[in-house]
Length: 80
Image (cartoon, rainbow, N blue to C red):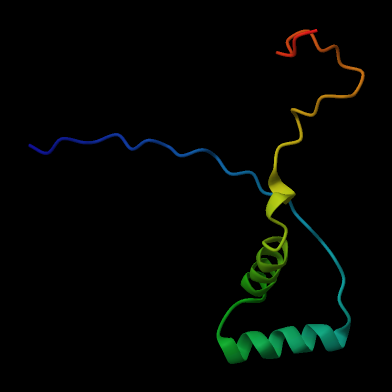
């Protein structure tokens, strides 16, 4: 008798849709490049975006913990 294992569901990924326009020459160049390298245009665009954004290492840092200058300094360790 085989036992069934429950698989844990991973965190659901959220995707956003982007639309943009390219010229006819650009579309032909993308199609030709994709045919030569045997990839889809979607993969090409995603890889180019990933490589370009990878050059900015602190782009994805969380800015939620920014403390404004007007914030009270009640918990500073400075002796006054």
